[in-house]
Image 1 (cartoon, helix red, strand yellow):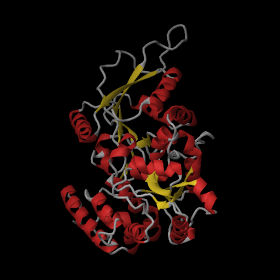
Image 2 (cartoon, rainbow, N blue to C red; image 1 turned 90 degrees about the vertical axis):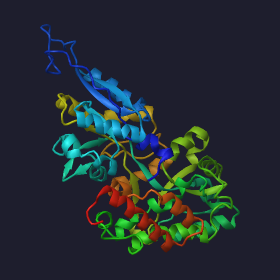
Image 3 (cartoon, rainbow, N blue to C red; image 1 turned 45 degrees about the vertical axis):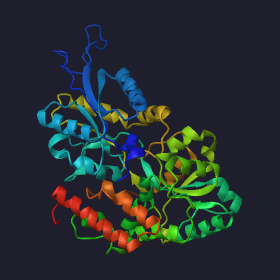
Image 4 (cartoon, helix red, strand yellow; image 1 turned 30 degrees about the vertical axis):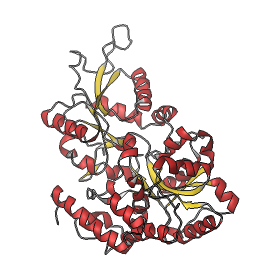
Length: 439
């Protein structure tokens, strides 16, 4: 799992301070006074978010919602990381939880026993437009528990459009076409693929971003992997992800100093066009915009190509979700807030404050025309449904040493098959710790 730079988007967010009692007697949001105007007694909904989440977009939604309804939304914050995880578990266990909870989707949600702790939203009309991939990441036993709290991110290849234009290249639809582009870029004296393995987490991206392709070949891989019925080393589609990582190094496409180059330097190489491609998760667009705002129009994006042109699709990092505490006394008010949050108006308010680094996980929502070009490049895959969540949103099995293993494979120290076998051993320890069936 990618830690570190993506914390802002994917760490559980909500820390909530349990709100004091709601004003006695205020049972409805729309109580009218004798004059026919709304009562000044507002129903209050509390919302726990971690202190690493950007609140500007969320606050814009809350402000507009409070004006439209007779409901007040009060944010409490909690720490991020494992400390925050423990706070959420403790507060749920003791009945001291806020009405709304911000938490990671995927495996970190499953650790909270969602059926016991959160309201099933699957029958709510506002859930009909939520992307299936996100629903999958917030579901248990066919019940759906959350809405997306932020736009998505995707894993794939950021590229410099000016370099592509200068060398007459077109966006590759197959892995072989990508390798042919890399060869032309190398011959032109530029870095074809930016490697930033000084920050070892970045070495994982080629492996992780391949999950759409793995599932295109082996649709049941995530479930079989979780149940110990499939291994990476013996599943050709999954082993292929390690082979792609190894091939980029073997063919000499990385910058010579890739082991000493860090993430920030890699972004600069991409922006300046000294490097043409950077395998990366698109949260990096926010960092790029902060350091090279004048170069954002030069940066495009494409998914990690399949070996077959007709199987192209995008591996998506699902956002954190917003969940309703099953023991809340304000479930109806909380549902009204979620409905507004995922509306076009709610999305517009959020993205007016925080520029999205990926499309939203809501069908039918239009993003403004001034989104980054790289985000526009992702939209067709969302519109056609050619997306799949990254493996960590489909399986709780994640080995702690992946970034060390991908660094070894990506720098030629270990072969692809050896890396796959090492990772199979790595995940085994973790699956046993989780007590998963079949291990």
